[in-house]
Every structure is written in structure tokens, then in C-alpha cells.
Amino acid sequence: MKTNILCFVLLLFFWIDLQGQSIQNVKATQHDKTIVVTYDLVGLKSGQTATISLFCSEDGGSNWGSKLHYVTGDIGQNISAGYGKQIIWQVLEERERLTGSNISFEVRAMLSSLNDFGIELVYVRGGTFTMGCTSEQGNDCEGDEKPAHQVTLSDFYIGKYEVTQKQWREIMGTSTPLSDPSYFKNCDDCPVEQVSWNDIQEFIKKLNQKTGKNYRLPTEAEWEYAARGGTQSKGYKYAGSNNIGEVAWYIDNSSSKTHAIGGKKPNELGIYDMSGNVWEWCSDWDGSYSAGSQRNPQGSSSGGGRVLRGGGWGDGARGCRVSDRDGGNPGDGDGGFRLVVSP
Image (spheres, rainbow, N blue to C red):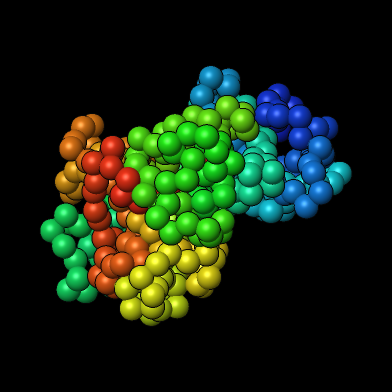
């Protein structure tokens, strides 16, 4: 039985779909109980890397919902350019997941962003976490953080830093009412602030036109998962520490102003300022949690405000927790933001 499955998969492995011109010369060979896939990763700019994933389709390529997990080698994030890269797939470990009758495979490369106006992205591997009022939040939980519930998310990329005033001006131009909205001016590397949710949609539209990518705001669930450290989470109360002063500019240390991005310690994923500095807009309408498990939730379908997360320079520690929630009128200039891209 195992031999038949292995041979069947190997035969179909030569029907690989390739996404993008960065992956070339894909080949697959059988080595005992493993499949070894070799490929070339080319066309990257100096210093650029890629995140490599291996996906499975069980209906001949119509749907690509199954990402393979029993893989090692040149796969995952920060893969540099080169020839003869190898992915080793332990096919027998994953055979229970392959129930379809028309199986094919796809190698994907997501290139890191080096020239998108200085926007740096961090890869966040998907997983399941408890969203909302969890034990490390202690007595600081508020009503809108309950009930705590299970959420499963797919992989995504999120901004390593909040979008800065300089990046905002580069995209929005210098001759419009939205050219320089921040109160704390003359600080290129400080996060842009006093922008509305609606303003950000205009920024994203222009950014995507300039880059050809599909940047967007994070969902509230993506934001909290990334703030908690994703699969690397150590269960901190704030984004990267139980000591808020290590990771956040907040009311006790900010001197009543924003600060340049990256001035505090990052969280477990290497993301900065998810606690403090400026409140960050999310894509969701502000609504109540439900108790049931969810997969890639998008939040309420309507509401009076959009979600804001993370606290800011003028907030106390309680407002900078990873589970704290706030909301604002989408037309009001209430915060800043960071960006997300889906693989």
C-alpha cells in the first residue's frame, strides 16, 4: 500500500505548476521513502530572498488549498538565490491527507520586498491560537475581549514596522490635503499618524498601482496573531515582552510624542512597535466576538467603526496589550497602520 502511494505521487510530481519566473528547472526524484524536488531560484536582486512553499491540489490544479508540511531543505523563509535547491518531502508521513484522485503539486516563491518604498515584510506562518482574553492578560481584560476563542489563520506577510511619514509622502505626493497629516512632523522615520481608515484605503490603492502588489490592512485576527508572536509565541502580555518598557513607547516613557520606528525590542517574529507608539488600523468592522472556532475571520459584516489595535504614545500599559481592542470612525484621523500581503 505504501509503495503504491509513493509511486503514484512521484508520477504526478512532474506535472508541477510554477508561479513566477523566479523558480525554474523543477525536477523530482524518488529516494527510498522520500521525494526530492530540486529547483533553481533565479532573478532575485542583490540581498533579496524568497519564501518557498510546496502546495498540493487534489483536483488536478483547480484548487490549491493544501500546503505540505512534512518537508525540509530549501523551503520556508529567507531562501537565497541559487541553483540546485532541494526540498525533501516525507511523502508517507503526509499520505493520510492525500485523499483525492487527481493529485498535482505547485512550488511557490514569495519574494521579499526590497524596493517598495522601504516597506519591509515579515513572514508569518499560519497556525491556530486563542484570540481575546487569555490568562496572561490577568485582570486587565475588558468585556469586548471576551469570549476567548480559537482562530486558525493561513500564512501571510506583515510589515516589520509601522508605515512612516516618509513612506506616506512618497506614495500620496506632496500637493494634496493628505500629503502630510501627522501632528508630530519633521520625523521621516516616525510612524505616520492622524490618518483615517478611509485615507489608508487611498494610500493602499496608490501603493498597489505603483508596485503591482496587493497590499492591504491586516484583519484584526492577523494583527493579534502577529503581535502575539505567531507560532513562536512565548505568551507575553505585550508584543514581545511582559515588561512594557522594553517593547513600547507609551505614556510613561514617550515624552508625549511618537518615536522613530524600531527603537524598542521586537517581538518573537522580529516585528516592532505592535505595542505602543501609534494605534494601528485593521480592516475589520468593530464588533463583538463569538465563542465558536473560526478560520481566517474577517470580522463583523458591518458596524459603526473600524478596529484599532496596539495602543499608542499617550496610552497606559493596559491599552497596549496584545488583546486590547478599540474602534474608530473610518473617516476620523485616529491612528497609523502597518501593511499585510497574502502569499
